[in-house]
Amino acid sequence: MDRKFVCQYCNTGYSREKTLAVHMCEQKRRALQKDEKHVKLGYYAFTRFYQLCQNLKGTKTYEEFCKSSYYNAFVKFGSFVSNVRPLYPEKYVDYVVTSGVKLDHWCRDELYEKYALELIKKEGVETAVERSIKTMMDWADEQQAPWEDYFRYASLNRVTQHLRDGKISPWLVLNCKSGKEMMSKFNDEQLQIVYHVMDPQHWALRFKRSVADVELVKEIAQKANL
Figure 1 (cartoon, rainbow, N blue to C red):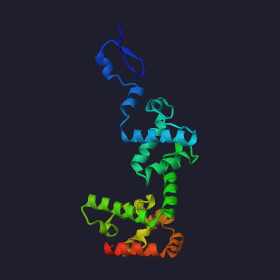
Figure 2: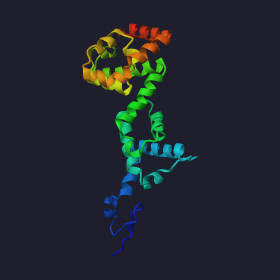
Figure 3: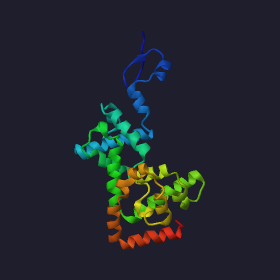
Figure 4: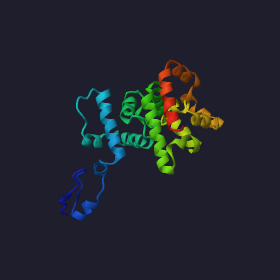
């Protein structure tokens, strides 16, 4: 049989062009997924792994990524990053690939929570407040409500998640009236989830050492009617 139509990815031959057109081998599927967000994130992590851990000077090609036995694991991680939307995604990828954690464990929530907690406790006040207000504005767009009502009317479960993931900072919650009132409504389970983020001892000391920053946040909160 004349097999003049050959797949460029797996070299399988077909006698009809139409059959080749509908043929879908694994390598062809990977090639066609190149522009999908989770695949692009996986490819970025793959390249950063070789640059940071294997001293690669350049970049891995997408074709090398497709042929890697680790392709599926990196794409799975890309899906995780896409869904979680971590604080500073590129920093998070670098954090993970240099963490020493096995690739199969990169998609575990506790790894991101550890990263987020370290960042939340160290970052500057301007960045923390800016990100918090953006999160509140995103909520407002979805709910068609004033963003300054976030602490008053947002779902407590959603706020709990935002606090745990670092999308809302203790800098703002603990320095405005509506934020502190919201915290008083949390049940025991919600308080347990955010306790490591809202660590009273850490923030009491941080605020004591950063009086000017606290006053800045309070001024912002007052002007926004928080």
